[in-house]
Length: 431
Image 1 (cartoon, one colour):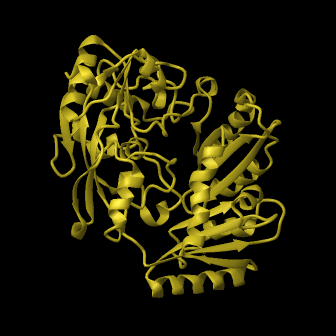
Image 2 (tube, rainbow, N blue to C red):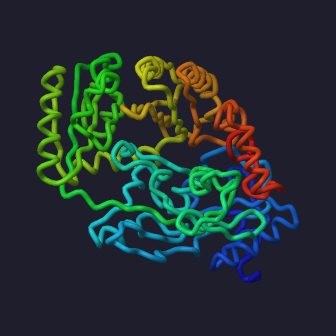
């Protein structure tokens, strides 16, 4: 194990995970050095958390314990790229912005990075499984990751996907590692299917009257009226968020991302206008970069401003009721809220920020967030705290009550990480 990979406490302190500081920070230069560290950690019983840029570290529960942080910052860059096959492989520490620059030079895109905070790495995107509003058209990381190079807790290096390692109990290991928050193995490289850049993009904005949650717009999802339009994303934003994004003054707004070649987008716009006419909604169209700037603000600028971020998911039939509950929550001062409803996905995103320059204690949000969690559970869904103080996440549990499959998840954790080396306590059910 290369000794120059270790750094002292003064550096390790800057790699804190929530309110825990590791005794050591290790930055391997290659997968072999990463395996050396984990082999040592496994033998000594250390608790290790893998880290890319750190932008995704607020997700999940604070770790139960922490001895070392494994930084993937030096494992960066594209390792293989075959544009004609729409496949790229890159190290986990590669910033998504760097990867996108390589792909766009060849007229392609990852198509998965919109929801990720600025600075997010490929490994962070895969480990969290974060899905953007464009999941309707682009899918999720679990859909698009073809294979992985992973270092297990005992230092064993495995490949999944194209070069298949024997699956555990018949499970698809690639899909198991995606979204597991680094609790089953440290992702070192990922093979991802990419997409051609669309020749034309447009944002169609539909608005109805101001007032309570617009049942007319919500109905577009429930009766599948949006299907003929074929949007890559369909997000219903509340009046406060619409104003923040500069797409409306006092009304709810429905944002439709339309992509394709010239003829495809023209036809989708025609159908969107016809739909707006039938539903009595006003429509505005923003082409190209002007429309993409709205999605950029929704996915990047807003999350960086919010102190608390939650994701709620319910069955589609319960979406209208949950939206009404959310719109009526009396948030305590000085907190203000913005809300985005994913039509067709059943995913509701909630951002909360404290007004003014003072730093507000987010523990006052526990009661209203707990009530929303109960409302989501009533709709056969869940509320996940994606960003909040360590204290609030400990009191509420970032993931909520243990799911029905937690016993199976624990069995997989025990099989792959029997000594609980990797990020103990961060995942669902304290795994």
